[in-house]
Image (tube, rainbow, N blue to C red):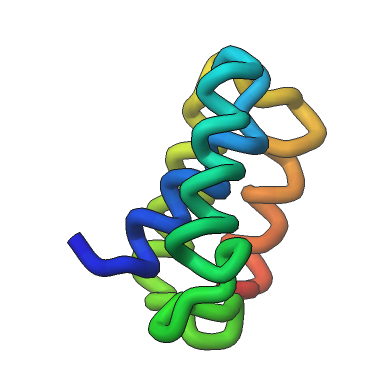
Length: 84
């Protein structure tokens, strides 16, 4: 697993409403101490993402029962407009 992936996992943890504050604090400390606050060489910007992975994520969004109807509609529109 690359450093960018590890840092990305900690960033995702910070935005996850289902993780404890203790877990989020640990992720903050790891990002600050080991990853310069999360600024990792090799991390991927939106314009560099694999379009097939983006499409897969949008399709998963459309089928996820925990996602709002608005988010599902936006995912559908992005797929239809090839906004990958």
